[in-house]
Image (cartoon, rainbow, N blue to C red):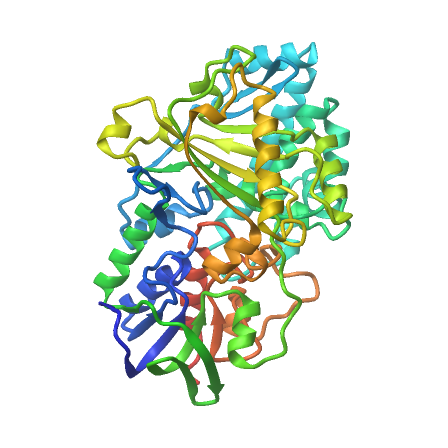
Length: 511
C-alpha cells in the first residue's frame, strides 16, 4: 500500500529511496513473502524516472530527467508483468555537418549508405562502421545474459569474446580504437558519444571510465537499442509502483530518512515522524548519501557533468541541409560532437571553464509518442525536444549565470544548422544543471549514475565471500545492500540493481 503518514513498525526489509530500482527490489522481495517498506523523500516515487508537466499552462508531461530505455532486461519486464510499450525509432542518429550531415537509420537502408558516401567520399567508413558494431554486438551477446546472475569472472567472459574486440573495448582507452578504426572526425565523434553520456572524461583517459560507459550503452538486451517509453518515463514508474503495491509492499512518501543504524541484529531507519526497524536495509540512494545516513566516512563526492534542457516547440525547425526534420530529430541529433570537438570541450571544462562550443544531443519524444501531449497540443504541430549536454561539470555550471550562458551556447549551436532560428518556435523551456539535479533528486554532485560506472564482472583477484559480494551489491555492513545505480551493475533505467539486490538477499544465509 501507499502511505504518506508517519509510521513506526517492524519489517523484514526497509528500502531507502523510491527510485525505479527500489520498486523492482520491493516487488521481487514482497512476492517472495517478505514484509517490505519503501521510504521515499519526495511526494512521489520514481526518482529520475518520472514525467512532469514542466511548463505552466502547457499540457505536456515530459520525461524530466531520464528519457529512453535500453538496459531494462526483457526478463524483468516479463517476470514483474510490466505493461510497457517501448517503441523503436526509425532514425538512430543525425549529425549535421557543413550544410549536409550524417544520417544513420536504426535498420540500415539506402539513406544511410548515401549519407556515408556523401560525407566521406567512399564506402570505407561505412564498412568500418558495420564491422565495429558487429563486433560490439557479439560482445554484448556475451555480457548481457550475465547481468541478472551473480557476477561472472572476467576470465570467463574474455574467453568467450573475440580478443581484438575485448582489447578495444575493455583493455585500452576507447579513443585508441576509434582513431584506428575510423578516419573521419565526425564519424569518430558519433561513435564516441556513447562513452560520454553522464561521464566526464577524455576518450583517452587511462582510467577507462569512458570504456565502461560505452559498454553499458551498447549491451542493453544484447542489442544496445534505446527505445521510447510510450507515456514517458512516468509510465515506466507507474507500472513499477503498481506491481510493487500489488505484491504487498508498503510505500511511504514524503519520508526523508535522516539516520540509519545497522547492528548484528538488524537495522533502524528513522526520520522526522517515523522510525522503522528491519532485518535488512536496501539502499536506493547513492553510496555517498548512504554513508552520511550511517555515519560512515564519506567517500569522494561524485560530480555530474550533464546539462539537461527540456523544450516544447510549436513545430520542428527546418534544417539548412534540407533533411526532413521529422527524420533528423526522431533519433539522436548530435551537436558539436565530432571527436575533436568532444576532446576540446573536455579539455576546456577540465581547465575550469565552460567549453567554447556546446557538445550534446537532442531528441524528439513526440515524433514517436504523442500521448504525452494534451488534446490541444497533440492536435497541433507542437513537439517536445530534449537536450543532453556533455562536458558541463558541476564545478563549471556553478550558478544561474553560467547556466544561462550554457543555454545560449546550445541555442547558437543549433541555429548554425537551421534554416530559421529556434527561439521564435519555443513555447516553453527548462534547463537543469548538475547542481539543480542534486537539489531536486538528492543525487550527490548531480551524477546521474550515483558515481562512475563499474565493470559488470569480477576482476582477476576478486574472491567473493558473501551473497552480496557475488551479486555486486555489498556494502561494509552485512545487513545493508545496494539496490540503486551505485551497485556494481547500476546505471540507467534498467532495474538490474534492484533485481540483483533482491536476489542477493534471498540467497543470503539467515543472519
